[in-house]
Length: 437
Image (cartoon, rainbow, N blue to C red):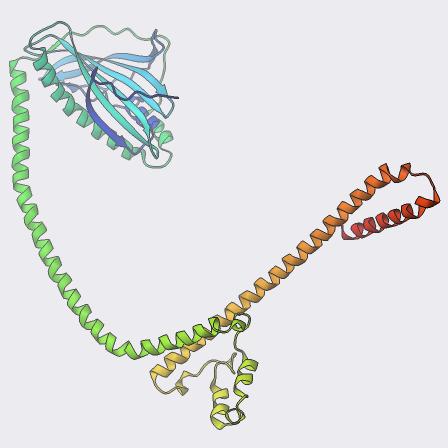
């Protein structure tokens, strides 16, 4: 059983747990590819000044790592942030874990520290990926102020990870939905490797004084106040707009309902009679199909109608019946029907419905005849196959008897007649079989 660890608490603090519509390998290259700047643009407190590109080296543990000092600006001053990235697990398009370490920082209170992020990318259902982001703070020495620094740094990490999530979402959108892995490698590059890693010098500690902390706190307070003010103004406005839209839509819907009600009443009075006549005609046509078993094998054609009507000679010789034969769609299958001879729209509708039912019955009759021919052909094939199989079996029996029995019988009068009959029978079987094959 293969196990992939995704829970690293309580060693680390879980900050983010999100699912993205892209395979793990595409997310991995979007984060750590040679052309990716997703992680290299994310720094605590400071802003990136340049983007660096550096190959990966192999550590003594067999993992891939790279170290670089990122030029950055803090409070208008140039500085360097030392970054180390190390890939712990790399199972192709299934499971990836790596760490992203930044050092060193020092607030007004507490010990110098470094921040380590652990990112886990694991395969999810339907070509999706689940990304877990953990963080941990390492101090150089013990201090009573360290818990306060951890709380402050955790808040900074949360803001940083939110930007990271936004960058991943934008990368997934850029990758698209077809050939995602190939496109991710094309856009963000492969992981280049070097056998001669470049040594990185240690950087000085970036210190944040009381002015920086005040700016940080004031900036957050201003951001929250601004966000609250905007929401306080926009929310009532959105509610008013939604209410107006709802009222206008309700009035429009009521008008449509009333209009449709009047239209339904008008059409109901106009079509009630036609509906019942059509239903009666459909019922009559259905009886033609289901009531009499012989109707399933053949439809009502000219001879059937004549045999039915000629039972009453007075009807068959009447003038109405003669005129009916001239205009009936049954007696005139190839001619176009003249519906103008029917008086009233109801009679015309019933006649059209009857003709449609008559044509449907003819189609069913044709389908049944075709199926019957197919079944007959299949029966003939089965009979032929059974006959040929039986002859082959008899021929095999004959070969066995000729090889193992007849050859061992002496020419004695008592057995010769029976042997001759067997030989004659076997020759006849093989002759018939040869003609079949």
